[in-house]
Each structure stands twice: as structure tokens, then as C-alpha cells.
Length: 304
Ligand SMILES: Nc1ncnc2c1ncn2[C@@H]1O[C@H](COP(=O)(O)OP(=O)(O)O)[C@@H](O)[C@H]1O
Ligand SMILES: [Mg+2]
Image (cartoon, rainbow, N blue to C red; front, side, top):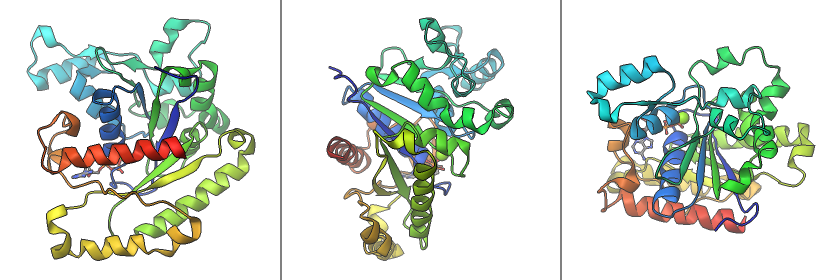
């Protein structure tokens, strides 16, 4: 199935928190792997590790015995479905602890979730502390080198990277190996100013790291407007805010694509960390919405 390096690496980024980066990484990633049978690797480079927490909760994992025990108690789980401990961590990737001559050492980076097409490089709680001794070069090149040295692209159709909301070496680490970045925005006043700022930051990163972007020209895949309440559009004035985004100067001047599909609001995403739209019964709005959104995502990653 996998063609040589047909893999697309996409960073989900916005230097604003709470816009849906983590949720979209998880939902698009899971739909690609689950229903569409694509091989998907998720990478959690956000020290807040929300993506990791969510995936661990869904599939029953923890990063240490202590956390596993705590999770078991919270879950009231019996011995049979005990929480499994994984040693996989982004920390090992950034520290360069993975040896490409030793195939089992990949397990220190990537957790393959059994009976799925989904894998994850989990984030690490306290990453800023555990990587404090690394110089910025090590941090910024960590994911790129790991992917190159271990030919990781050959094993996946999609690698999706969940970025932190603040600008740091982790942002550069995510963008260096990426073919594309995708920008979730909430329909709010001034949200396009954040996009303008992000474009400037990406330009600067490209300029100062030219050799990395020579073969792969890191493109903006587009903007997704998130958390849109379909039924309340007109009442809340959301429609006006969406129009403002559609007509914004920044999109036209920089030729940035806006996704036709918005990501619809679904309250279950807030109340249940283990919720997955693709596994849900939300057949009226959310599921068809994720289906169209993911199809649009695939279309753009294929044509560039
Ligand atoms: N479409 C949506 N409908 C309802 N809640 C959402 C939706 N997308 C995200 N959320 C919620 O909004 C909050 C922020 O989303 P998150 O994906 O964590 O943002 P980010 O990663 O950009 O900080 C979370 O509580 C999440 O559950
Ligand atoms: Mg997040």
C-alpha cells in the first residue's frame, strides 16, 4: 500500500491556545487511521501533553507504573484491562536516545497501538525540565533527525504533529520535518492577526534554516475555522465573524486557503477526553462534518 515516501507530514499550529489544534490532530488522525485505513503517526510536541492524555485514556496507557496505578484506580479497572505502561516518549527523540542500529530502540520513541493503524510519539510531562540541558540546535533538529535517521516516512501515510501554543524551539522542531502546516482558528475578532503573525514567524524560521526547507518547501495547507455552532450561526453573529475571516486581507494577499468545511461544535469533545467522533453515534452533524473535513484535508495534501 505504502509508496516510497508518499508520506505527508503536517503540523497543526497556531500561536493561540484553545483554538482546536489538539482536537483536530486527534480527530483527523483517528479518522484517517480507523475508517480510512491509513497508517498514521501522531507526534505530541506540546509540553501540555493534552493529545497524549487523550490517546492514553482511550487506549489504556500510562507513562509510568505510578500513573498506571492511579489511572487504574480512577477507571475502576479490573486486573484484565489494567493500564499498560509505555516507555515511548518525545523526550527520547529530542535527547537523541534512539539508535538506528537497534530496532527495539524505536519503542522508546513510538508506541504502536495494537489492532489499529495508529501510532503515537507521546509527549512528556515536564518536557521543559527534562530537556533543559539540551542546546537549541539539539531540540530544533530532534524530530527531523529522528525521522531521517530511521526512515520513519516510509512507514506512514500521514505524520501529524500537535504543536504548542507558544513560540519556542519545539515549534521549530515541529516545522523542520513538515511538508505542511495547518492553522485552526476560532471565529473571533482579531483571529486573523494571529495568522498574520504566524506567517511572519514561519517565514523567519524558513529563512534561518534554509537547507532544511530546500527539498520540502513547507506550505500553509489552509485555515480551518473551528468550534462553529451550526444551529446558532445567525443568532450569535458567528456568520459575520466567519465572513470577516473569508474576506480578510491576509488571506488574499498571502494566497492562504480557507477550508470549505468548518469544524463544528460538539459539546462531548469538552466533557469527555476519551471521545472520538469517528467512533461516535453523532451521525447528524459531527460525523459527516469530520468526514468532509478529512476528505478536504486529504485532497489538499495530495495536490499541495
Ligand atoms: N469542535 C469543538 N466543539 C466543542 N469543543 C471543542 C471543539 N474543538 C475543541 N474543543 C474544546 O476546546 C478546548 C480547546 O481545544 P484544543 O483542541 O485543546 O485547543 P488547542 O490545542 O488549540 O489549545 C478543549 O476543551 C476542546 O475539547
Ligand atoms: Mg493543544
